[in-house]
Length: 415
Ligand SMILES: C[S@@+](CC[C@H](N)C(=O)[O-])C[C@H]1O[C@@H](n2cnc3c(N)ncnc32)[C@H](O)[C@@H]1O
Image 1 (tube, rainbow, N blue to C red):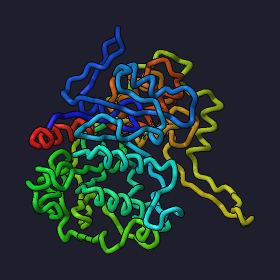
Image 2 (cartoon, rainbow, N blue to C red):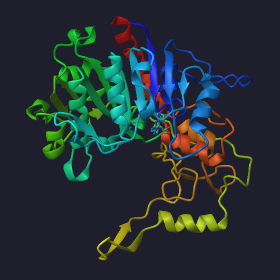
Image 3 (tube, rainbow, N blue to C red):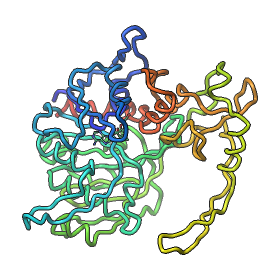
Image 4 (tube, rainbow, N blue to C red):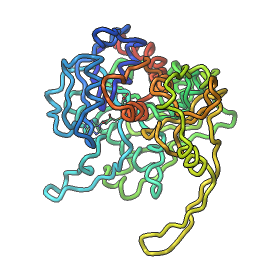
């Protein structure tokens, strides 16, 4: 099959950077220098919370405006999306519960604005052969009150659309990257594909340890006395029934075929990570990144231990407490997980002791880009400084996609 791709929730193009092995852009035109042969036939990016569309502007600066849509994905006519063999996207973890529609007793619908339903609709309309998705690892456990319900509903929906699915939770620093960022990657293929017929036993340990896409790209070891769990999603009539009663403990590794799930806990075959020391640049701008005295005081409080009285909606007072964390990040370690608030006075922001001045400072936008394996200045497309950090907090470690790419390419070329 041709390697044609659509990128949903495209942000600043992390999947494309990874798949097409991009490490630079042309400084004159601003266009990315694509080294791979994945043909991106369509992308969609729309940020609901801001008028100015910084992510879309960055994406189109780097990749041109052809076939890049800036509409709410919900309003896209899915049947007009170009044909493709691979759908990719990083989407938010939301509430996947479904209910019967009032107008039609057989009809079922999920909550409005839940972006997974747009993915499912696209897969259905376009009979997409393969997909690769990324999400926070919390997706496997959500919601807290009904552990595993949302992921179960998602897997059942994909099963009903004719897909087999493999998932794996990956911490990027375990595979040599510079950030401790744990995300779940979800790979799906049509159950009538050549790939599906080549692997008869996708529910076996053997497949998940040696042959699967993630096993070949990101090797794992299996502990002795490994504990498997399995479940048959077909025992529920539909996702409405699952919404009412489904609970399951999805582990960090697993597959689904025809609604049968196998899952177990695996460990990575660890590689040495990139450290913060290898990522940091020499900072000459003394004002933008170094902390003021006031900011230093705020950080001492924010990163320190505390007990704060709070009031519940029913008026009851309780104490919210959190322990102390290190004031500055150890340069001998990979970075922590970057959030969209990176670079602001926030407990989770990285703070480093600048090796040249011995003073505390924020990380720079270029350092944030390096933590996600983007080319330097990728987001330097005219957006404010804060937004550059925000874009990186939303993005993914493209080095992980680069690792998955060769085997994914073989699978699709062989199809
Ligand atoms: C987790 S981020 C994905 C980032 C991307 N993987 C990257 O490398 O930059 C999710 C993206 O979905 C976009 N988004 C949120 N709601 C959307 C909607 N209704 N339609 C289209 N895009 C949406 C956000 O603006 C954000 O860029």
